[in-house]
Amino acid sequence: MAAESSFRALRAVEKDEGFFVTEIQEMPLASLPDHDVLIKVRYSSLNFKDALSAHGHRGVTREFPHTPGIDAAGVVVECGSGAFAPGDEVLVTGYDLGMNTPGGFGEYIRVPSDWVIKKPAHHDLRYFMVLGTAGLTAGLSVDRLATTVKPSDGEILVTGATGGVGSIAVALLAKLGYQAVALTSKVDHSDMLVRLGAHRIVDRSYVEDLPDKKALYKETWAGVVDTVGGSLFSKAVKAINHSGAATTCGMVAGTEVSTTIFPFILRGISVFGIDSVEISKARKERIWQLFDNEWALTNLDGISHDISLEELPAAIEKIHMGKMLGRMVLRHNP
Ligand SMILES: NC(=O)c1ccc[n+]([C@@H]2O[C@H](COP(=O)([O-])OP(=O)(O)OC[C@H]3O[C@@H](n4cnc5c(N)ncnc54)[C@H](OP(=O)(O)O)[C@@H]3O)[C@@H](O)[C@H]2O)c1
Image 1 (tube, rainbow, N blue to C red):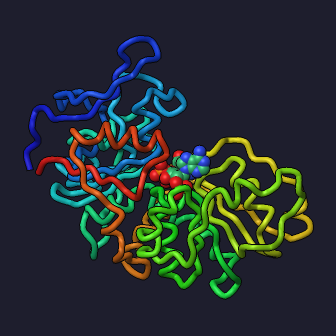
Image 2: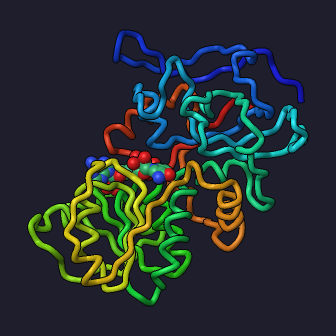
C-alpha cells in the first residue's frame, strides 16, 4: 500500500495564550516523527484524555499544535524493523500515542514497533476501537477485581457507568456472571445500561449523599469498579463488604481521595490501581485476546457511535460536560 504525501488530522491549536481550538489541517506525511512503523489509521476512538489534550491540558500534552488520539487501529504501510508486514492489521493504544506523539485523530501515525499489537483474529478493527483504551481499562479493572471477588460474593458497584470505561465494565461484569450495579447521574438512560447487562441502576446521588463524617457505611458491595475518583470513590470504599476489593482508574470527580483507615483494617478490603498506558505489551495483548475470545461482547452496538473528523469537536465538548454516553468511534475516510 503506497502512502499519500499528506493526510488530514484534527489538531489542537493554541490561538492565544491559554486559549485552544481544534481545527482540521492537511499535514505532510513527513511531519510525523521518525519511528519505524507507518500506519494508515482506519479507526480511532474518543477518550477522556483526548478531551484534555484537545483543550490544551499541559499535564497530557506539552507542546501545541498537536494531534490527539490515544487509540488507533489500522493497516501497516511500512515497517523499518521488519516486525510487521505491509497490510498487517494492528492496534496501538497508550504509551505516548496522542499525548506528545501525533495520535489517532490523524489519518496516519508513525510509532515504534514496541507499541504495535497485531489485531486478534476474530473481530474487526472497529470492534477493538469500540473498546479502545476505555475497554482495555475496563478489562484490566475487572481482571484485577476477579482475583479477589467472585460472582457469588455479591453486587459490584460501577461508578461513571454511562461513560466509556464504566459502560464496558458493566457489560463485561455481566458477561462474567457478576451482578453489576450501575451508578450514574443519567438514570434516564437506564435502558442502555440494562441492555449492557446492569443488574440494577442507582442514582449517583445515593453515594454522593452518604454522610461525610462516618468512618464506615453498611456493607453494601462485594466490589467496586471505580472510574471517577474523588469523593465518590472515597465513599464507595467505606461500603465494601469484608474481604472485598475496589479498582480505581479515573479522576473525573476529583484527584483527592479521603477515607478512614477502617475499611482496610476492620474489613480487610483491597484497592487496586489500574494503569492502561505503560503496562507491558504482553499484558495488553492478553486483554485484547480475552476480548476476542472468552470476553467477546456482542451488545456494544447500542453504546457505540461512528463519527467523522468533522463531528469530533462536538463529541469532545460532550466529554467535558460529563455528558458522554458510551463510546465514540472515529472513522477515517477509507
Ligand atoms: N488509568 C487509566 O489507564 C485510564 C484509562 C482510561 C480512562 N481513564 C480515566 O477514567 C476516567 C473515565 O474515563 P472515560 O473515558 O470513561 O470517561 P467518560 O466517557 O467521559 O465517562 C466518565 C463518566 O463519569 C461520570 N462523571 C462525569 N463527571 C463526573 C463527576 N464530576 N462526578 C462523578 N461522575 C462523573 C459520567 O457518568 P454518569 O453520568 O453515568 O455518572 C461520565 O459519563 C477518566 O478520568 C479517564 O482519564 C484512566
